[in-house]
Length: 559
Ligand code: ATP
Ligand code: MG
Image (cartoon, rainbow, N blue to C red; front, top):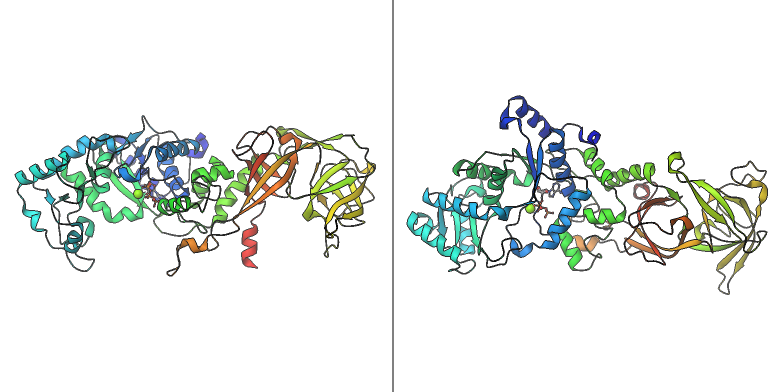
């Protein structure tokens, strides 16, 4: 992250903070946190929250903590923790101090539960889950008190201690805050604050068999860390009174405040860890970092840059109104970054042989091309012109359609950065498929020299012998519907795009790419932006197509 980037446009949260700073609230401090639950990999929605929380701290000279909200041990794992840490770092952010875990506070939270019991503000309930649901009431009807609500402080202390010791089975009882069974806000109807889970915890091991609820953990963890502005998504708005109730009724060191913003929804994908996990578990994709996934690690593998994701988050802004952002915006953000920063190269995805008959066998003529047309500082690249070349099958038409600007029998095109060639002969196999084109080059057309030929088009090419073998993986959107979750009858599985991955196994790229490191990004001229995949081997480079040169999807949709 550069300093310049942190001077982001303002939003309603920044306005609140500026007001607080003006009034001298929180001793002039700004402390935020990003609190992922380690139950899956982060997705593009989380990037919005990361950019907001870390970006806000940067902007106001504050601090942002990374805290794992780890109160559901069965669903969480070290793999997810590691991936989240890597993703936040890759996005360019650094947290204040050590990585934190809600589980670091389990001792304090237990003490605070005892505190509520002693104050007569919490009780052990022995209703079954089913009964509890019935007693809870509905949006239109008030709840009714559990028969166990009036247990004495002593009895509650004793039962809660037994819960902690493992004397009860899971589900046999819970600890609830005693608030208001008639509250119009269901979250305030004596919410569960501790439940029995005889599960091993990735951080606290087997120390606990009771775990605090999200609501009993979040605000308290914020308070213990000195968070000033606890920024979360709108679905927690109804939990805010509870957040405030705990802060008001417990001996917390400071009183953080919660603010909500609209979550990011992106069309043609799903942003829910649960659904993304299903796609992984059901092998609809090849893991969490499949380049079609909207996960940070998927986008990274696809070729997205951290800056492009941060810019995207800036572009979409932060508001309180829910909407759906067009995938085209995310693609535009990476296209803009790569257009400026990715070196150019030539790669033929589906090659057809082109023999230059007036070029002697074994001879090489090297051409120098700019690595970037608008940025000389990126230097030059060298490509060999030889007798045996490869061009894109698509760039040849035996019977050209009208206005054809590429190669066809008897016609000429320029090979990018080299000579003008003319198609002299077409060779076919028994089935009638074109297998080779014989052409001649005109030595007077070297480089960009003017020529009498005035070829109609320019195509990309590589030397057949002196180029590098690659597999190119071209991706399309994972879902065919803008809102794969929006259909009442069918679920998102029904809208998985069967053509979201097309592989070109016999592609060849210019020889200079041979030693490209994993994650190197290029513009393949006339094709789009591509990134080296970790599946690459000594003999074959694997490229992922990040995005095309233009928004062809929008064009297709409007047809
Ligand atoms: P999911 O619904 O994908 O499981 P979550 O909200 O359960 O997401 P958490 O790990 O709890 O995932 O999220 C960590 C933080 O990221 C929370 O503050 C949450 O509000 C925020 N967040 C999650 N999804 C989005 C989103 N789509 N847009 C913006 N912020 C998000
Ligand atoms: Mg959550």
